[in-house]
Image (tube, rainbow, N blue to C red; front, side, top):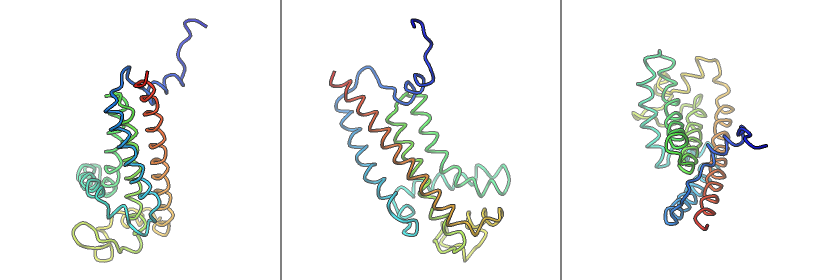
Length: 203
């Protein structure tokens, strides 16, 4: 029917698969290289075990840690519990904000897919920390472990307050696999966006 209003699928396609009218081929090649790079790196995050703490020993962990520590300060105004939880929240909020800015502000769907990849990586980065809640073996910022300073370990503190400490491994596993799912989705999304941009560049 003529004049038919666009449906939800049309809006979703416009938001998540938006492509510019013209695509620079050099930029397209650069995006393809980025996608390949995060695909390889992402698989390392996904398939290393939580116990290996690959995420915690990676270069990207140092960048994630900046937002984690800032979150403790920012969320402290909402009380002690939120101050402890705020580190992990901020670590997840930052890539989410990046994703939304690319998606809704700059209309860069490939950049948004990379933001989703980073969000998934941050979930995986948190998994070893959660997994260590009872054991308290991980060396934390400041050179102490959860055994040395029980209240210093965020997730030991949080899960103890919530009476969920015995489930630290279960929660860590869920967080790791959720992060892995986000990484797989981000790679598929990025590949689809690049395919559409390739078609435009060739035409």
